[in-house]
Amino acid sequence: MLFADADLTLLFYHALDRPRDFKNKVFWITGASSGIGEYLAYVLAKDHAKLILSGVNVERLKAVKERCIAISGCGEEDILLVPFQIEKFEKHDECVEKVLDHFGQIDVLVNNAGISQRADFADIDIEVDQHLFNVNVFGTVNLTRKVLKHFLKRKKGHVVVTSSVAGKIGAPYSSAYTGSKHALHGYFEGLRGEMVEENIDVTLVCPGPVFSLITDRCVTGKLGEQYGHKQQPTDKKMKTERCSDLMATAIAHKLDECWISLQPVLFVVYLAQYIPSTFKTLLLKLLFNKQRAMKIRQGR
Image 1: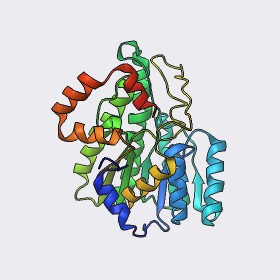
Image 2 (image 1 turned 120 degrees about the horizontal axis):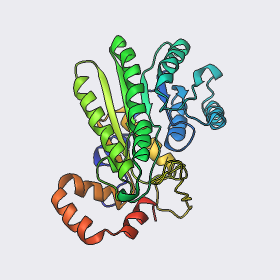
Image 3 (image 1 turned 90 degrees about the vertical axis):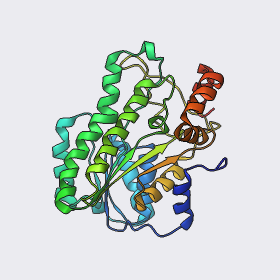
């Protein structure tokens, strides 16, 4: 386990190396213009899935679509761009209608849109908390409710949510982000329980530090203020390709939850999950300080 980069269940299924049955299935990915969402689109395109790509950067979405076509040989009509801001709830009905008019169905909704945050708890304005929750939680929840009506009519469907290891353990100096990711687990674990008899699956994906533009757009304790951290090639973060490939395996096998991260973050998640009192006593009180915590968050 000390050398693993995902939880043991996910690694077991990934090692089986079975073909992923994604051909002609319709996947809607939010946050698809960069990072995990972008590279998941490439994985799915190679497996001949049909894609809806959503995000706010239209030019980036066009570039992702072009690359998907190049690597898969699919047609223009197999990939639909639906740019929108996830926190604009009033746009969700229109977007769902556009998707269904084009493809007639949605098989898998991948809720990947989100933003990150860095600041001391005491220095965060409440407007930042509200913004984080509107983007990371309420936008995801509202869009899922719209798509869920379609799933219930079809009596099948799959909801995938990109959470974070910060949804499993509290990440110091990112309390608004951590709170939003914990909230996703509450909402979607509740949904999973409601869908047991409806043939609708829910998968929560919890990545650790991954090379992604999410840190470049990270907010602070003041609304509109950027954290300004730039990733370095030497950062100890998982490659986006590897994370997306493991995520595709979790989706293919309809795992309830998976953890994807390099060490030592993955080991910390195991400690927090299975021996929480020891984790809090040893790691939080004895080993953690602000400098160490920020290094881990930034993959240093």
